[in-house]
Image (cartoon, rainbow, N blue to C red; front, top):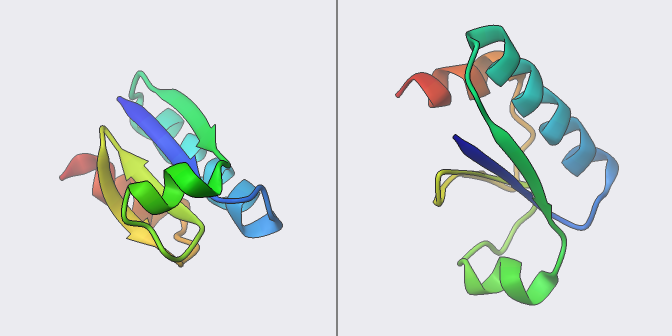
Length: 77
């Protein structure tokens, strides 16, 4: 599973990355975590509010900090 965090690297972006990592580890999912900080690339993906969570190319959340439990539920979908 490819997990991407889109954002500038702010505290919320860092927390979202941490929560996503916790959720993946808790579920025993093999994952690759990438951080995308280039604003042009973020906008090209249609994301206008950060932080954003992208899983396997699909934007799951944008402009919101999700808990590890909420993210885990997204991974299970």
